[in-house]
Length: 383
Ligand code: BGC
Image (cartoon, rainbow, N blue to C red):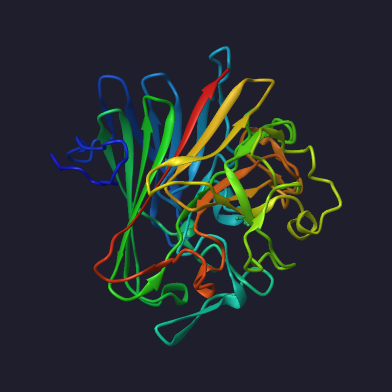
């Protein structure tokens, strides 16, 4: 038995996590279970697995160790009927060939770094420019495209999948050998909990997140404009036309970015507003209202037809609210569903974009001897 894998001060105790011994294909606790099957091969020939985590209420998360991708996630509606609430592909091929980061782990740096460079300790690091003039989501081969070591774990209140990846010094231009652990736990409270942990042997920058595309009416079942969204943020970081923060924290008050009270995603999305134009809709970092360093409520989404509710809690200072603006109907996903513009929203919990070039933003620097720890919980219910 192994002791606690992740200890995040002030958070739900994960003590009692156990590594399941041997190479068992399946393991069962009293209420929840995890099974594994083959999910094909990565482009380099590495065999890939697909893990199915099932909790005591029958909620199911399927996660692959290719990119740490959440392939599917079911949640009950107000009649107890389960539906898959995340966009994605049913085969590994889709993810390899053409994925706008569906469900994936993002690193080393979630969102953009301006012009693909930053200076740390007097040294300028150059990154792949893969999004207009900027570097997006870790570069050419980010953490969404690497094979993670995986093992199944049992939690006191659910079941988990522990992922590990060693990102070598210089990978994608970033300094330091970075050892990353991500623990996905499907709890018996209908939560998908993600604990991130990392250490480095050289000063570096780091901003890890998950890029799930949610649609609470069920994946592929229309746009999300009727979802009511609440974002617990008095301010957001306005962007330039290449989606880089201008530097100021702007009050959301009297702007289409005021989601402090539940508001339909579509209520203001087509307003004449320069920020909405720059983002082609919502694609902005919100500065979360928070006290202390523990988990706090970032956002709550409600889908009126099904009654499904998603709450996102995080230890992070920000969340990227993205409304699937660049989905254009060319992707056919799970069950042959076609994903059109605004067929999903993302709540990418994070540090602010371009922080390595913004000394006034909360720091994303990680130094040897320090341990990076962040947690995000996506909690599902219905009313
Ligand atoms: C970015 C968007 C991007 C999307 C998918 C979001 O985090 O802010 O601009 O299109 O990810 O890559």
